[in-house]
Length: 346
Ligand code: NDP
Image 1 (cartoon, rainbow, N blue to C red):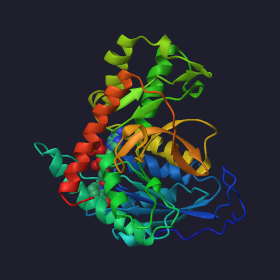
Image 2: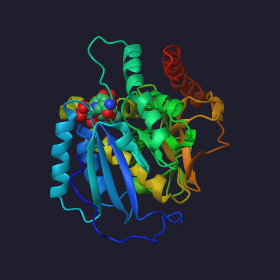
Image 3: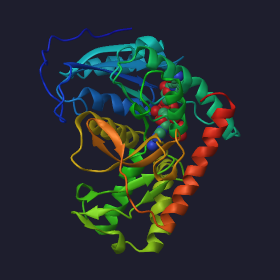
Image 4: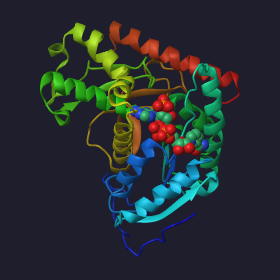
C-alpha cells in the first residue's frame, strides 16, 4: 500500500556533511515498523534530522497483524504533514520494502518466549534476518547502510551480513549506540557535566548484559577523566547499571525503553550519513580481527567515520582489566555465532 505520492520538492544538487554529493531523495526501510520503537523512530526520520534536506520515502515493513497497524501508523505520518516526507509504503514484501533502499533499520525481531532457550531464539531470528539479508543484497542500493536494532542485535547482524551478497560487511551494523548514550548519561550525571562535553566513551562487545562500557579513554572538554571516577563506582555501579539499563527501565516505567532506542538509532544513522568531526562513538560491526576479536563476529568497537564509512579506532593500549572484560563479552558473541553457524545460518 502506498498512501502518499511524492511531493514536487526539488532538492537536487545538495551535498552531505562529508562533502559528498547526494541524491535528492532517500529511501528508508524499517522492519517492525508498527512496533513501539517504530512509533518513535518514524517521526524522527520524517523530520529531516537524519537525512538533511532530502525527501524521505519510508517503507514500512511488517508481518501478520502488524501490517494493518503499520497502515494506521502511515495514516498518522500523513496527518503529521512533514514537508520532507515523500512516499510511504506499507508492505510485507521484502523486495518491495528494500528496493533501492539507502538506509535500512531492522527493528522487528521475534521476542523471547517464556522458557525458550537462547538457541531457539537465535534460530527463530535467523529465519527472519537471513531472508532479509538476502533481499537487501538483491535489491537495495549498493551503498545501503544497515542498522540492526532487533535483538539479539549483534548476531542478527552477522546473519544479515552472511546473506547480503554484494554488500560490504562494513555496511551492516548493530546498535550499541544506546548503550553508549546510556554510559554518557551516567558519567555526565556523576561528574556534573553535559554529555556534549564528553568524548571517547567506548562500549565493547555484545548488546547484552556482558557488554563492557569503558571509560579508560574518556575525556571531558578534551581532558582525560578516568582517574576522577573511582574503581568501585565503575565496577559496582556504572558497568552493571549501563549493561542492565533496559531491565531497569522496564521495572520503573512498566514498558521497554523504546523511545531511547529509537533516539539512539537516529543518532547512529544521522552520524553515518552526515559524518562526525573526529569524534568516537560505539558501533557494532563485523570484526576485521582488531583487538583480537575473531573476524566476522559483530562486535561493538570505538569507531570514527572516515569517508562516510565506520572505521575501528586502532592502536589503543588495552590493560588487564579491559582485556578481561572484552574477552568475556567476545566469548559470548563467539558462542552465539557458533550456535547460528551450527544451525547453518551464517
Ligand atoms: P519493539 O519495537 O519494542 O522492539 C523491537 C526490537 O527491538 C526487539 O527485538 C527489541 O528487543 C529490540 N530492542 C533493542 N533495543 C531495545 C530497547 N532499548 N528497548 C526496546 N527494544 C529494544 O517491539 P514491538 O513488539 O513493539 O514491535 C515489534 C514489531 O516487529 C511488531 O509490530 C511485529 O509485528 C514486528 N515483527 C516483524 C518481523 C519481520 O519484519 N519479519 C518479525 C517479528 C516481529 P527485546 O525483545 O530484547 O526488547
